[in-house]
Length: 438
Image 1 (cartoon, rainbow, N blue to C red):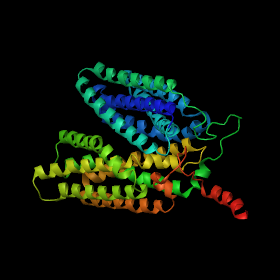
Image 2: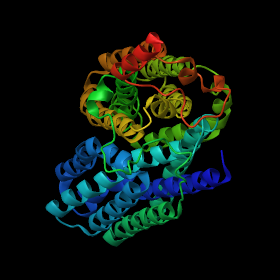
Image 3: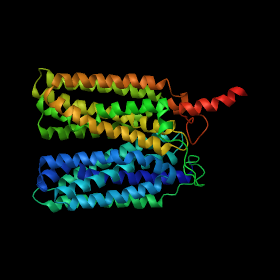
């Protein structure tokens, strides 16, 4: 990595952490703000949360093409400006229509940031440093969210709407800082992915058809959907409902469980990184499926066993901690793999496609898991044990479609900007024909 790339990477990581810090101020309190502080009711709060998530589904299909044609920097700056407007508007909204529209703007802006930041990480990292770059981003984002939530909790007062307005203004300020930092980043053209920004007016090659013909990427997207559906999509819905209804946890204890999840991520991230760096990515992801299957079994004991309330509570906290261990193993494997599978001119589109699968899982997960976790306790646990084992199966199948270097980047001996460029099946077949002729 050059000195300039290292400086750019540090600035991107700082901006990413600060934006997560800003989100931490508002995301945990959004429901309370709409339903109680603005007195718009639980129904409106549910709509606002749904619109916040669904806005991502509306913009992500177009984000990747914009990143690949214009570059991630202008897209990130535009997304920061949009998110800033959304945060300010939501903090000042007192009616239903204004709250819903503001949530849509905020959700769209924050959704576009993620693939833009991911693409910038790819541009600023090499084969040798990419795994650590994504692990550091995950660590800093979780740390930022956690600190933001803790600080925000000391500011909020449900009897004072202006205290929540202050939270949204702080969030908006962090988005402005992200945009300013992005404007100071200088990415040299030479070491960046070739042809990612056409200068002759032509369209970048590829598109959704090329992505869908790339079987390894399609399998990774399916795997990503299952990963986020079985974990993140359950944290604040199904698993929370199951913990309170079946395991008898107090709602306040859920905060301790979530803190345990974050603590494991923060403590274990770089210890785990040393263990997984030189191992095959597919097998690391497969191990996560086994860890999460065990976590769901522990949750089953908490709600379906016959132990004491203390044991049930401890088991539920352990479940959240085990999920955190799995998350710390995924951060240095899945996101870099998306980048390493992408053809040279489609990194933005591949990152956006994976982000779209993630967002779909986060939308479907609560809708499925919430009612099951609240009422169908046994089937709920069995369902997600099977989904977790499915992660293991899908990861091992994906490993068969990866090149040795894509599956284990430490095998790369010569520093390279892109790990063994992976072409969609139709392109790879065409490329191999001339070679066969020779």
